[in-house]
Image (cartoon, rainbow, N blue to C red):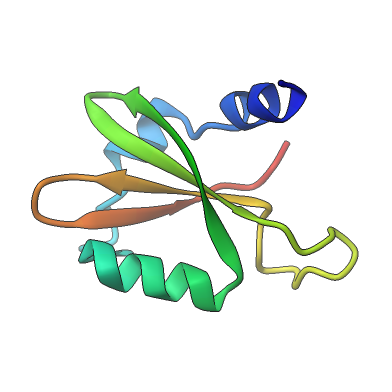
Length: 94
């Protein structure tokens, strides 16, 4: 239960979700492409989702211990799903 509370507290802001395509789609691709890239970076689906600003947002977690994880990899990343593409949302933990 504690893990679930941490994940829900770490969800991205409404602005981050709404602006996920702000960089002209550089962080957006098909669901399969996003999933393949995240798996290469050692992220795994948590099967936790929330609806934020009308979008379905899925949580992916990196289980590599903090001290061993690369500095450019946050513990959580988020994938905003739409009918045509998915967009990766990276946020820094607080």
